[in-house]
Image 1 (cartoon, rainbow, N blue to C red):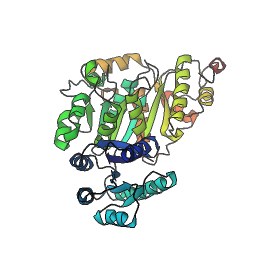
Image 2 (image 1 turned 120 degrees about the vertical axis):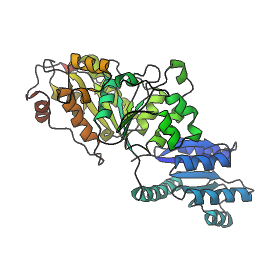
Image 3 (image 1 turned 180 degrees about the horizontal axis):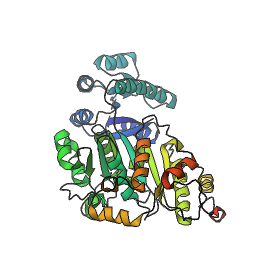
Image 4 (image 1 turned 90 degrees about the vertical axis):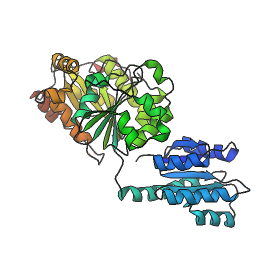
Length: 407
């Protein structure tokens, strides 16, 4: 389940700090914005449409705070308004509820009470989501080893999706998905972040670059230095806004676990981990799976795909799967000539050569990832090999004992 999104009204006192700390350290919550004044809070709630907003009441409460609660409750009824205060007198709680707050959180925060409030927010938010258009799915394509073809796969995966899709290039220093699509973007993620406080449909449409009726690009910054001011919080906010407008977002991520990449991985519904079938590739894949585990990602969120697979590779796939404790979702055949022609042409291979084995396999993977039940099961090994190569047996064997388990 996706984390609940929150916006807070920032104060420089201890209560506000404790509230923010609780939101940042709880795996069930994600802080979208921390506002400095009431007008900014109202604007961000209307723009970001979070699951909940928390307003910390001062001990000597002024009428302005209750007017703010009433304004938020009226302007954005889908957002749960939570009042928080050290003073938990019946009079203060009653006045908060009458103003429009749905929940009251006593400070200092008690974990059990906080979880009860989160349960209630989850219930209300789920009810709202079921009655409205759900947020689009986010698919992150990642490898912590360079040279595995992440950008090529991400671009072709996005082009293979049957729904309205955005390809977001989060490889901020050297992003090149625009060239894979033959595009020359006028704007990039840099302008998106700089204008995040006034994003609406018209501005969003002007900052992204259309490729086809069903595919658009949010390009990486044109110059490396433009990425300096982009922070993880900006990525979280941008993807949250974009997921309300696209049915699918495909992320092309950097090859490191830097804060920007982790922000993208956190928001992803599915992570496609790209692997090459060699000792360094298998080692880096296992290392990535362990990092995902430490980050608290469920294994069902991660799918491993082998890129540049050849029937001549001396590997027994079942041994690789046993070593990783992960069944492979797909095998992308190796065809260097066709891939290079596609890149030089500036057109995804799934469009330029729809009958190629690479295209067939990428489209099969795309169809699996488009399912919304999150219970996608990889094909049985023999069926998968047969689909890719028309054969059922892998060749040779790779001695996996040379790869340490703690690599």
